[in-house]
Image (tube, rainbow, N blue to C red):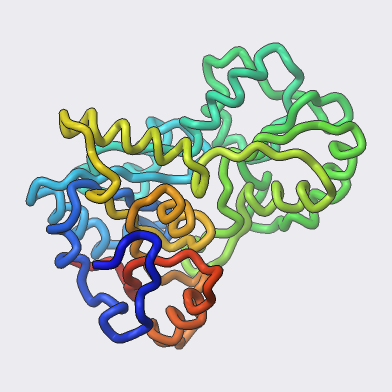
Amino acid sequence: ISSPRSRPQMTDSFVLPSIAPLAATSDVWFVDIWGVIHNGVRPCASSVTACQAFRKQGGTVLLVTNAPRPRDSVRRQLDRVGVAGAAYDEIVSSGDVSRELIEACAGRRILHIGPERDLPLFAGLGAVPGATANDAEVAVCTGLYDDETETPADYAAMLATLKSRAVPMICANPDRTVERDGHIIYCAGAVAAAYEALGGTVSYAGKPFQPIYELALELAGTLRSAPVTRERVLAIGDGIATDIAGAVNFGVRAVFIASGVHVRLGESMADAAARLFGAKSAPQPIAVMSEFVW
C-alpha cells in the first residue's frame, strides 16, 4: 500500500471493489457521515455494514463530520435517519471544534447565519446569537437559512455589509456542497468562500483543517486505551477538498467514495478517478470506490 503522500497509479487496482483488504492495515477508521454513512434522508446500508464488520474484528470507527453541531446533536440526527449505533464508536464534529472558537467570542454581538436546527452549537457558551449584519461584531455561519431554495448569491447584500464593517466570520462547516437524496445543496463553506472572495476574514473549523483530526486521533487513543499512530488510521470520505485533502495533509491514508458531488452520472469509477486525481496538484487517496462496501 502506498504512503499517504505517494501518487497511486490510475489502474484497475486503484479502484477497490471492497474495503475489507484495507481493514487489516488499520486500527481506526475516520469515516465521513453525509455522503458516506447516509444521504441526508436514509442510511447507506453497505457503509453501515462495512463499519459494523470492521468493529467486529476489533477496529474503532470514528465518524468525523463537518456537521456544525455538537456530537450529541449529530448522534440524535443519526438516530432519526436510522443509522445503527453499532456502526460506530464515537463522533467528532466540526461543531465540537467550532465551539472553542465561539466561546472566545462570549460577550460580543453575534450574527448566526444558518438554520435554527444548528442553534445547539451555541448552548452553554455565553455567546448568544441575535445580532444583524448592521450591528454584529462576529458572524458564525453554520449553513444557509433555507438550503433547499437558497444559494450563496442570496447572501450577497448581507456579506457586503459585513465586509464593509470588517466583521470576522467563523465557518462551522467548511463543506461547500453535499448531496441530499440525489440533490446537491449548498453548505456554510460556500457562503464563507463568497465572503473570502469579497476580502472578508474567515476562521474555519472542521475538515480539511488539522484541529478536527487532532481531536479525532486523541479520542481514538482514549477509546483504544493506547496511542494510535497515523499509519494505522484510514480516512474514508466523498469530499476531495475536505475528506481527502484533510486526511492526506494530516498524514493518514484516505479512500475516496464516489458521490454525486464529484462523480458524473454514468461516468465509470476509473474515468472519474483519472479526472479527479490525475493532476499533480490533486490530493491523493490510496484507492477509490464506487460505493463503500465490505
